[in-house]
Image (cartoon, rainbow, N blue to C red; front, side):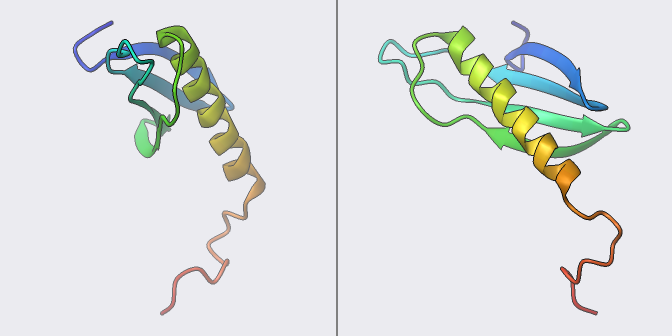
Length: 87
């Protein structure tokens, strides 16, 4: 584990995902996040929620959450014509 708590790095559907954890407490409380990068730019951070037996299960949960975010992103319209912003 390095200084920023990174425990895993992988590529999923052209997104680079970096999973970072803080130490898992005795009570099973963990904190962490996964940063999602695309084309060299940081695009999103998903946070860890819940209780986990160990760092491995916490890291696995963040991996699943990051992959689900990417899958959801891929399913959305990215044409810029969604009407989300007003002029």
